[in-house]
Each structure stands twice: as structure tokens, then as C-alpha cells.
Length: 304
Image (cartoon, rainbow, N blue to C red; front, side, top):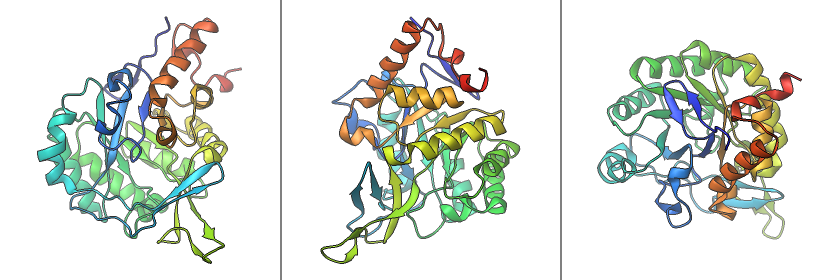
């Protein structure tokens, strides 16, 4: 057997595979399909201070080799999360990470403080990169000064492992990776969805109520892989790669390009067991190639 364990800050994961925020709900949606304890972590859906209804329908559309979504961070807010969702999440035998969202720096800070008090939540993923909400999101993720401000403020308020989720909708993603590192993040995750749109030629209307939304799936993988490779060379903190990972080979590409861990997202809508299948596929590869640990191949393309 190969050693799949990795470490992000003080967070020790049994393997490098996580479920991406927005694609696994709060875990319960996948309980009937897999044992979540076989995963390194799950990142539950985006959470905000106040309840959000999300965007109007239609807010999802299939595209060639991918999908567009404009859900708009629909959730019931932190009060509901603490009272009704957290007690169940605390029972999972894997790390549960919360994806944190806000309209203002103050929103992010207050939400991070609330989550800091929850013992069974060892980390947050600071989402400064959501392209399908009207406020917040990409305002922070595409402006270096705003990104620095919100990361620095959350770092002061939050004592546990801080992961910053970066947007691909920028000219130079390494700038945001460096800002995250400089302001105290233990890791960065990338990429979030690309900004895209689709038109229904029969109705002659946009397929999304918001016109534009976030593109995910296999179509964005080459872009995501390139950005992960760039950031892994630009910073010393761990990089978590995501974007179009459909199988173990895809995950291995990200790891070989420099990602310490990966997140599995859109494929879960097609195959709910994809996360655990990818874990097994990574281990099988390592054994067949006679590598004793996943660390042996992390960033290997830069060492050959």
C-alpha cells in the first residue's frame, strides 16, 4: 500500500481527495452512495451570515463538456447551519470544511468568527471568487487590494486552517496566490468556475436567468491545470487543485503539476461515488509505479 496522507497547515488528511463546495451539499446527499470517511475532506456548500434565496430559475444549463450554474449561494444562513446542520456534520469521520461567503469584509469576518468556535470544523475555505452572485465574490477575487483586505481581516479573526479559493477570471492568478500567502493563508484552492454564458437559439433567450454564470466540468480542466502549475511554482503554501477532475488520471495530472490535494466537483452529479473511486485510482497508480507515497509524485513534472 502507498501512503496517501497529506498535511495542510495543522490539518492532517488521510488522502488528498476532497469533495468540492456546492457539489456535495452538506454530505448527507451522498451518504447512500459512499462512506465519506474514505475521503480526505468534504467542503460543504457556500455559507453566508444571512439566509439567501439564490438567483431566479433557470440557474443551471448543460454545455459541451461541462455545465453552467448561477445558483447564487442559496443557503439558510449561519444560525440555521449551527443549529440544524452542524450537529450532524460533527459526527462525520472525515474533515468538514465550510466554504465562507460574504458581501462585505465585515460579513466574511463575522462568519469566520462564528465558525472558529465550532470544534468539528477545523478549516474554512474563503470564497473570494464566486462569479454568480451580484455582490461580493469576484469583487474581492479579481481586485488585488480588495483580496488582500479581506484575507488579512479574516486571518486576524480566524485561528484555524485558512484556505483561500481563487478565481480564474483574472489576468495573473499568481498575484492572488502570493497575496494569500503573504496574508497568512495556509493553502489556496483553484480554480473556481470560469465566467461563461449560453443562449437558447429556439427561445432566443439566455439559458440562465442571470445571463452569465460559472462554467465547470471537463471543458475547464486545461485552464485549471495550467493555473495550478503556475501557482505551485509561485508560492510555498499548499495548492489544492480543482476544475474538471472526472477520474483518477485527471487528479494525478493536478498532483503531478504541483497540487498537494484535489477537489472533485461536477463529476459527482454524474457519478456520486467518484470521490472514493478517485482515491482508489490514485493508490492503484502509486502501487503499480512503485511509489511509496503520494508525496513522491507531487510536482514531479517540475523535477524531471
